[in-house]
Image (tube, rainbow, N blue to C red):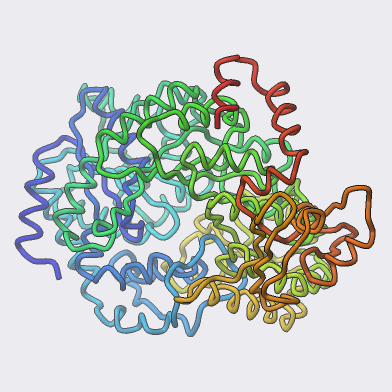
Amino acid sequence: MIDDRVTDGLRRLIGTPELVLVNPPFAGIDRPSYALHLLQAIASEQGVASRILYGNLLLAASLGELEYERICYASSGALLGERFFAATAYGKKPTFPAGERTGTHIRTSRIDGDLEKLHDIYEQGDLAARWCECLADALVQSGARAVGITTTFEQSAACISLARAVKQRDSSILVLIGGANCEGEMAGGLARICGSADFIFSGESEASFRDWCTRFAAGAIAPPSGEEPVIVGGAPCQDLDSLPLPDYSDFYDQLFLLLPDSKVLASNAVWLPFETSRGCWWGAKHHCTFCGINGEGMGFRQKDADKAVADLARLAERHPTNRVLMLDNIMPHTYFGTLLPKLASREERLHIFYEQKANLDFRRVQYLKNAGVEVIQPGIEALSSDLLRHMRKGVKAHQNIALLRYALMNNVFVNWNLLHSFPDDHLEWYTATRDLLPFLFHLCPPTGVFGLSIDRFSPYFDLAADFGLSEVKPVSSYYDVLPEGAPVDRIAYHFEATYRSGSRENPAVIGEIEALVAQWRRAWESTGEVPRCHVIQIDPEHYLLIDTRPVAAETFAMLTAPQARIGLLGTAEGGDGTLVDWALSRNLCLRYEDAILPLATADPAVYLGIDRRAEKGLRAFDERTLTDPLTRDAVRAL
């Protein structure tokens, strides 16, 4: 619960700044806000003293860490975080959904279990109000002249609640709102329901916020004269190297104060957000049909590799963790020849998460691993080439499966999922996926199976009619949460529509895929050994196969070198069809989409020893991509 000790501690930490930036619930508690700390550094450059207040940590301490996370990481379509603050934001009694809504997807739930168990939390109806009172009192007592509140995904109701509480206490305090929920048309929608705000920053706001701080420091900022907030438009930042490096000290101070016994601290699991690029180099040419993540900033921009390495080194020196959460939508492809070799040569190793394109070969996965990239999110989304083409992903199913194998062989964790319910999709794409899954149980499983969300800024939203979508409207959860008369169509990010879909019209097949994925995940989450289909070298001509998948023909088998080759590469020297038939009969390979898919894994040295083509590929990659001799030598040394 929120007690005097906590509020006193917060007041001491806040001090007496001119500006306080607030991260409200339901942001994750295992990472600071990159955006707020970046703005804090920009304010400092303009002579404005500021602090960051982690309202999400305060609520997690009051609610309990587990209960907080169950809301934070629940399905976004149910808007549980918005429901929690609906009464304080709009005077609207929160309703609890009968069950998790289907047909929407944005982020993966990390907390399993029945969401209806959260009903008791909603019964604590005054906790949201007490959270607002505590924070508003602390902000007013700090003497700050301005308060900025961020909102992304499910932070809007908490943001609006706090803005109102601050203004009720001291109307002279300027209230700023910004974040992804304010981009484009959404800013105008929020302005209609948040009269307590003075300014709403829309889009990338480094330049517009810097200008605002300059005028604020000079005493040239006045409250708007109209009834609605002033919308301050931003433009995509074209020079990422010019941005200051964030300092996450405020986050750590409050984490130690509010959650001293947190599992995040106990396991040193704090992630340090960092970015090396913005936009998407693939999406700028071929926008994936369902993706709305980039909003109005699709154009690709990247940091200089030397600058990125230097900033990462300083960030790691400042804070007691080596975990780095890269915020990039996709890693710059040139970094295989620049950034990764430099990170690999560092004495202090980092533990990095990075989003990738899925068409990585074995060597590129090795480069990632040697540079400290331990977790990747490659946007696999489907195991059907037809469906991937339908999404405009630019990869084929065999490349996705190969990446899962390469990652496992190099001990790189893959964060991925399966999507369904696409407009004009075909049932056979999913039946083929269903039949494929049991052969892959030795590879890293998907986080889940999710229905399509039609998101703002995606082609499905912007060009709905071109894709056969009609009656596009916000998902019904928004109407459960937002006040009467709110411009829901301007505020919402998730939408639903009427369209033909083979998978949506055949839910039994999707249910079968969900059941297989659940079985797959249980096998990996059990205390026993995960399934394997792994080749071990005994001597130059003999190998041992260990196969504990449900589809295994036998658990242990001795293999010759040609047999190991076809199990790992899917090809036989001289095109020996007999060997191909042998591998297919033992499920070491699979005939899928008119190709032979190898399924076995091996330690990297064994795989490279068999795949002589991989060594040739490395030489070709060096000649094609690396022009600097020192960098080329560093990559070869990997």
